[in-house]
Image 1: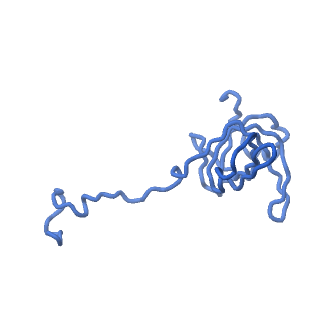
Image 2: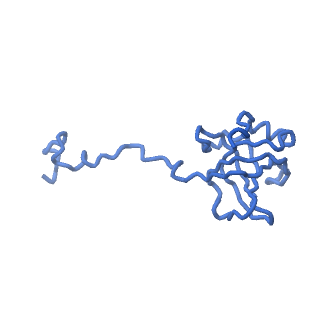
Image 3: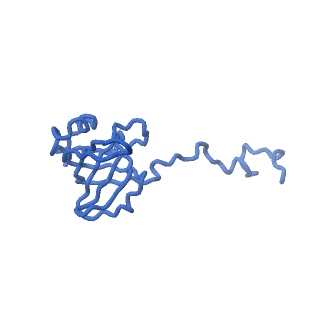
Length: 153
């Protein structure tokens, strides 16, 4: 499938002229804004985000170039894609759809999902910034632990 993917096609171009790139296969990703069940499949509204080397979205929301709609054929439970979920996909550009967004009309590029990857939340949780060395705090046999510092000694 890698040979079919147009990796040199930026999202801005797809958003500007979705009809021109109809049928092209791209890799996109971002943050799920909503997912809803339709008769023929599931519609996922995604806030586009740049991808890293592993094709995982980089969750810096200010780098987004817009939104897009991705359609998954068959059953995909919207409960498995709550708002805020990080996803990336190999998708085919299918055109555009205009829907209301707040008080304006917004033109969404539409995609047909071929492969969907849901990234685990642990990937985006920052670890504790300081290392935890419990032996440095209360371990009287540590070579750098002087006994006169120990009030319980």
